[in-house]
Length: 451
Image 1 (cartoon, rainbow, N blue to C red):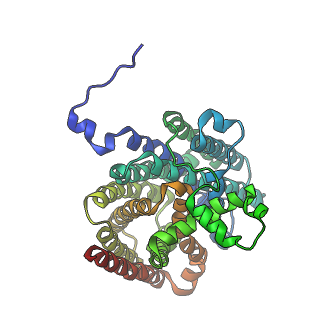
Image 2 (image 1 turned 30 degrees about the vertical axis):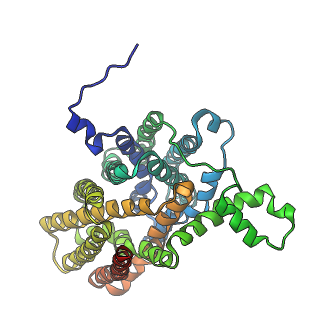
Image 3 (image 1 turned 180 degrees about the vertical axis):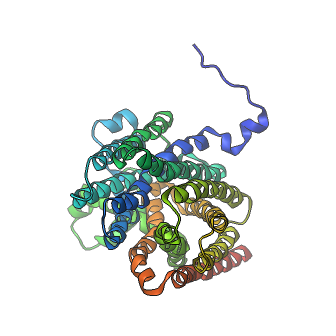
């Protein structure tokens, strides 16, 4: 029996956000976004309610480094076959299923642990959750790039961020409301149950076509092997493990450098600094709101709920304009706006508690943050060679957050030493290097277009 089809007008049917490969990213983005706050911001509030010290809560934010160093195991995701399940579900889908099951298990485990008595156990399970979540990010990023043509990459990135941010609303505001209404145990168990949305996305997503070349057979791998083992024995050069190392680690990096030459270093520096301001500022944002006198419920409603809605709008705008306009100019605009919105927090720090001011600042900051991320993700997708999708995209996204998370771990001490006004000014200044590098990249493109 044929499945009934809904008749859509040509305009709606051809609208980029209604393409199946784009719509699926909403569910997969939700699956990726749900665990993040549950091991970072929401976990911090759980630890605070358990009586854990402010310094320990600050250091616990380094759990998020798992997302920044995921590039270290991204080659395994690109090259290791999971026994039994890959033959059933395919390369990307088998890894995705493993990650989603692992996240569910760890969230349930956290819910049963008393953080006031067994802080170390909570941290361990949060770390394992972050590991599975970061691995899931690797898989979904590769899945998104491989499932979409160039013309839908921007829309897919925007839809992914929308799903991601919807999940963050649930893991942020939703988890806080559930904890107030019931308990943290109840809240985390409901969050684990919500991972079923990701499983639905997994069920509805066919295995994408990805470019595969037999290990050791690509021209690039042969060139690298000849350079590395020109004076070595023939057996070492032909060793299967050595070939896998070359394919997994050396080839993606060499490919990137061959394509962009020394400008590759400039691009890496740009990726590493673009989100520095927002990440460092974001670690202390929730604590700042509390210190201003806002309640958990007010923070949940204004920052976690309304704020993330603004981020979703920004992400969709970013994905749209990245495909319609000059992408480096979009990135330049985003860089300027990120610096300005960070300075709004400096202003708010010198003012008494004001709900209207908080709403205004959250509106501007989250709209700009979503726009910046949507444009950046589209830019990163344009840098990927689809032969090394998972490894290269993981490298880019790891660099995007690594330095921000390292500096962010010290943000509590920075606030204690400087106060909020100077801290937020400092976080805004951190955005200047990306702005300058962006100008250099625009100059490079201008020179290339003249040739």
